Length: 240
Ligand SMILES: NC(=O)c1ccc[n+]([C@@H]2O[C@H](COP(=O)([O-])OP(=O)(O)OC[C@H]3O[C@@H](n4cnc5c(N)ncnc54)[C@H](OP(=O)(O)O)[C@@H]3O)[C@@H](O)[C@H]2O)c1
Image 1 (cartoon, rainbow, N blue to C red):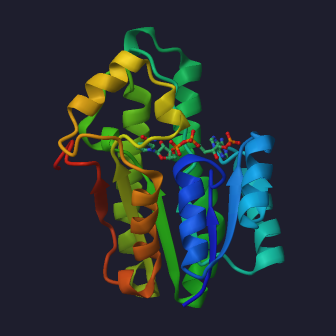
Image 2: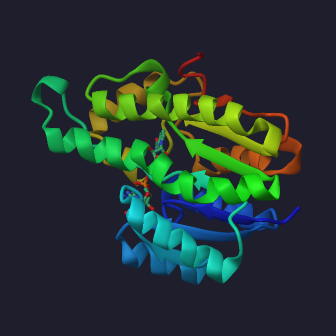
């Protein structure tokens, strides 16, 4: 059934593909972003999907942003916690700012975004919460202690929240993408990227659309029995 879906970081990369796919599946979709107004305006013009700007690391901004989204579109039934960043570097050289920025954006955001919508979902006996974690939260990745810790935290969040809300028609799941061809991966040094692709049995980077269709399934009525789970979409790079 058609629902209202909010996709954080839904204007670029994997999030943009998720926004488009949920719209194609018939849902009313809104997308949030952090600061890239140009990309957001282009995305809005191409898709007709409304965009909202706030920082998912800021609880008050999330509460205000969600209130505006709900006033204009109706209660959020499907929340896709997708927004994320990297601030890579070896741990012995990592600054507190590199650590905090990643934990704040990739992990605190789950509290900030989910807390304002969960009571409404419980009252309506329906909800779909989908978190875009990462392969590197499962296997760990050198140079990404901050990111790996945040993304592993995402998985614990999903398992606990799923248990609390399973009897309220709410499912909570994580997707752990492998390396997907977006700006985030394009920012990697070329040699490092070549080494990564060589280690992917499927022999290529993933496409944002390949993550998006997993989201569409989990958001659908067919996804009702899947909860507290972690769905790997990584080309066979890591089999947990
Ligand atoms: N690409 C991969 O290979 C890969 C693999 C595994 C997991 N992931 C995860 O998948 C998610 C999406 O990654 P991506 O590659 O699509 O990233 P991306 O291309 O860099 O896009 C990131 C999106 O998140 C938004 N965002 C970043 N910080 C934010 C903040 N503080 N508040 C609100 N929005 C914020 C950005 O907004 P602006 O446009 O305004 O900057 C943008 O829309 C992330 O959680 C990432 O960790 C990616």
